[in-house]
Image (cartoon, rainbow, N blue to C red; front, side):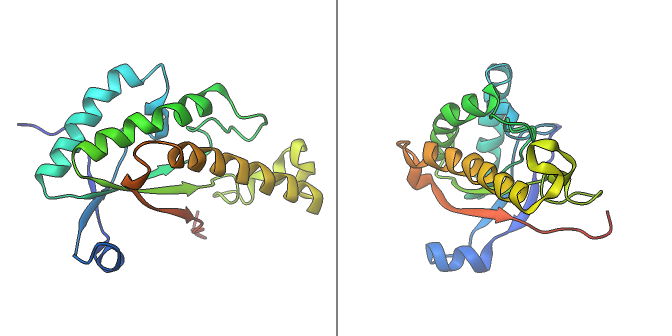
Amino acid sequence: MKIDKWLMPIVFASLLGSVSGELEFGFNYWPHGYASECLNDSLWPSQKPIIEADLDHISSLSGHVIRITFWPYPSGWPISWPLQPEYHQQTERIEEFLGLCHARDIKVIVCFSNGHVLNGYGPRWTQHEIYENGSPEGFQVFLDHAVSWINGLIDAIEASAYKDTVIYYDLQNEYHHSR
């Protein structure tokens, strides 16, 4: 069988050893070529069977953990405000996604990576009038928007029947200076 998707292995052994009491093996995950936009109404019907097959494959490889990352653009926060309809589609569909993981005994780490903070060209948020082009007051507005973006997703997860599938939330805030 040819596998046309990339599953990027990552090791969570030391961290998960303290969570589950056993060493675990896991993967970074979203369907190849997509991020959280695969949860949008326009993509879910075509991506759900792929996700199910990928989760089955991960499970067959003894993978018991995946890390999914929400980036601003794919999750409906294109730097402008308010949040876009895609964001609300994802907050509504995350429960179904977690249910697919739960059915396969796969735990989930939810990561938020705010590409609006820093990118290869510097702090992207400072380049927009909505954030007063980088003023201290504008930075506070930016932070408030970032908290709303993250908390909306967390609130949707915590209100779901599968909230225990998520073992923790992570804020990915690494900046790679060579970009």
